Image (cartoon, rainbow, N blue to C red; front, side, top):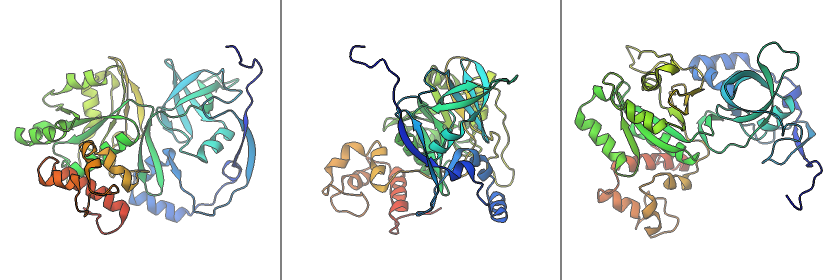
Length: 385
């Protein structure tokens, strides 16, 4: 184009941690082992979580030259592009137009990424170079493109990216076994909105509850604008509707352990062949059958991320004053409150509370909002259980 320089694009200097790249950090092995025994999810999360250091922690730095954030580094601009389909430890499996490679990450890039965010996630778009002299399909990731959307959760002191660059989240709950928990469903919806994903609600195992119960749950969310898909693998119900919703899209299946994500995905597309398991007989809690998130190509067009079942789900980076925006039925009423900074908790003249009392907002939805805000305010509003 006219006016553009024909010379090479200049990079900029960035300071990155030297210690993270060179030094080995001592670990309290006994404390780590105890933590793993307390929650097996720790090992599942280890490869895809970032630690938050204490204020005041110091590390030696070094300077590297990189391109602007919106462009690939100077020496990677012409490299092939792939999508991360799975992360296992320090190895990322990359799909490049049907070709699969096991890739490591360039050390300098890893240091730079880890200083600002979780380095790699399923769905990341990357530029890579094949390993010279390797007989296997191996490569090195040289650049990670900026993420367009993310689905994240807070896990202890880390933020875990469950999926990146996906179009929509199929938020799954079971009608029973495990018991449907509306508050947890609402948490997933808030996380999807926060990350820029379109949420679609899937109520699975509808054969385990009465028609009246299923209709009540589905109507509650459909009336405020959500797409709700009641499904059952046993009855082969809702499978066509799921296929149509997923066709040509990149989706992520997310929900707590035992809701039947892998079983439903197998029924929707038998070619994906996901491993499935059974509920524990005593606790009726789900067992992990998917151990790492994996991006899978659908035979009818599109992609889906099958995530491990979660035992807990805490919102990441969602302050109290943002939560109202992610309850879609609140949005038309927010500007009608008496006070411009109304939190919709105890304040007089609150349009949200008035709508709850009038029956225009479902009380369980408001209870979910109240609980999420209370947990962040720490003023006694948080409700546990």
